[in-house]
Image (cartoon, rainbow, N blue to C red):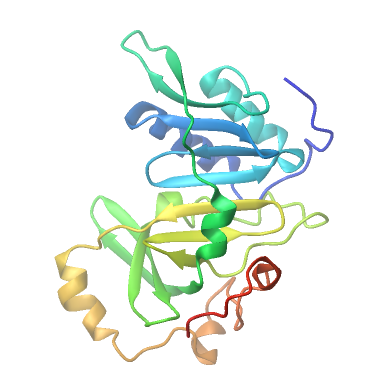
Length: 234
């Protein structure tokens, strides 16, 4: 394993929870792990992580090594699946996303509403989009159970602001890391009964935001102004 020089740095993601979803992805759809553009790229069908290599914590790297055996070298990207013998088999991946470009294209953003949706056996966070005030949901096991300041090194980075949104995907970004989660269908009951009852409510208003832990009443100050010249479409 190569030394990065800053392995003690911590992230805004709980390593234990992240390891759980990496392990579940490895068993279900497969786990893609790469070392591209000076970043570790780790993702599956409904979530992903893109972190600058010098700022990947030792705990995170150890979790990857425990699951797949080693860390990829620069320029390498592999899909790992578990074969019938219980071993992981790598397959080279040539076509992988550019999370930074995808985040940069996400001109909409959302607020995490003070509402939880329980649809057994699933639990979801409820987010409201800024552009049209519509609601989307994301699995809690992939979102607020993973995203936390408990392992954050505040001398290096801060917690991400509200997630950006594009094409059914929520993006959380700070100085070193992009973490994304695909939204899901909340089910007919939520669409036909619950969400219509929330019409006319904006969780972006000051009195809601004051009670919405971790949210700030402003557009994310994350540098997109320098990254893209187009104005936001609202």
